[in-house]
Image 1 (cartoon, rainbow, N blue to C red):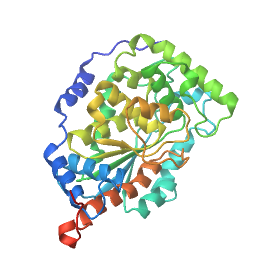
Image 2 (image 1 turned 180 degrees about the horizontal axis):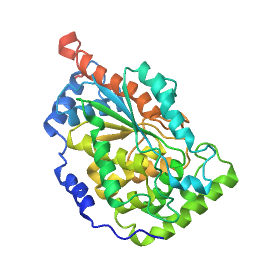
Image 3 (image 1 turned 90 degrees about the vertical axis):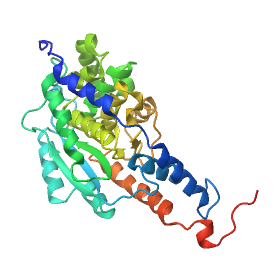
Image 4 (image 1 turned 45 degrees about the vertical axis):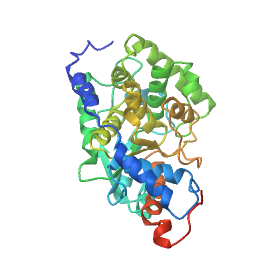
Length: 343
């Protein structure tokens, strides 16, 4: 049975945050572009690395950006829709993987260690899964707004580059439901194997998503309602982290399919709200590239990864660091006494 309508007040607070978003620093952009033109290389020869360095400069508001306190924030939650048999793994794996993160045994631990990235894992009431979206809204409005606010705390501590990732058994079903709720099409357009279900399992996931979206269809014109009805705590928290990054001018790297579903909610509220974000990689989850296209982004990497847990975003930090170091450390033509381009 559907929950009674919420008051609207908690989400008003979230909507008001969008009115506080700073724009890009155009003076910093001009200074960074001017520096790129004077570095000892043919113009544009570093390709996208030049764009990345300029993007970092724009959002940090300086000619020479820095990466001294990068952080990978991994948000973990459980989902009532797992009761519908949508995952190849039992729900207790979420808590077990959180323990693995804490012990340093997960893939993301090794990648963070490689690139000197801080790692924080945020447990979101694992003992209280969100409600099954096939029969009720995942979260109340107050719960959803409070979780967005909690996610905003991820950038506390002078973080200068944020990676967002997640852990949650069943959350590719949730991400697919969000995509279907936002963008329409057929449920099957947005469904993939997730943690490894077979073709029959994928078809079952599509049926579950169809039932969920049909239940909530009268409320899906509001992205925040899509989030609370079809989403979950880790999705809401990642949306909050993205919002906080924009308010505090912290560049954000978005991980895979599930993390991108959180970005899609923010984008649906304001298409310019993700200008401080890059999509780190294209996941092997089939629908991810379509979601990336919907939010107007181009992934940095395409390595066939589909692990989640912030792994692709953390890996992309190496690319961002290289872009920043070449931008900051290369000599100009004048400094190196190299003749520049004539004419």
